[in-house]
Image 1 (cartoon, rainbow, N blue to C red):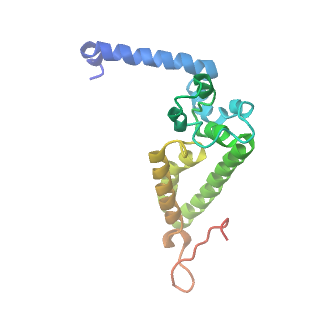
Image 2 (cartoon, one colour; image 1 turned 120 degrees about the horizontal axis):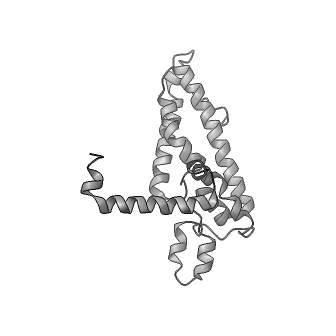
Image 3 (cartoon, helix red, strand yellow; image 1 turned 90 degrees about the vertical axis):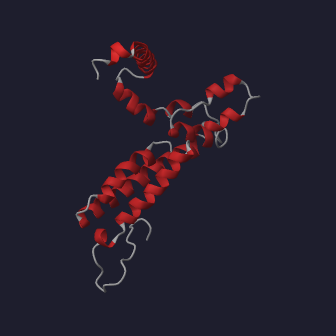
Length: 189
């Protein structure tokens, strides 16, 4: 099939290669590391907004999809606050101080969750908590948690499933009384 694609669909192949080359040209402006630079871009892009955002931020939603509702606002202003990554949106929306605190909170939350997932996986011998964390971890760390409703909804749903898998009787081991397993989250107690 790969051999026939250029013969049967030459226009589609040309369009795909053109888009690939344009994306490569844009991405090489931000980093010379190629695909690795693009992967790291999500975690370092917020630094460029630290000096541009006011101390209290521009308000919730203005760094993301909310700015499209402001058609009467100066287009140069909207271009300045357009944030591609979620961490950048925190800085634009909340300001450098609160935005940075929220980023630190997200990193700490994912770190604590990962610790609990590893403990639960080791204790139970089941990979379910680790598999669920594999889906949730990136999204909670730097993904589109606040920028896109559907992604955020699925992240919260799977976070609940991940916590339930960590908190199951198999993950925590049976209690000495034989009754229902108690919640044993170290950072909640």
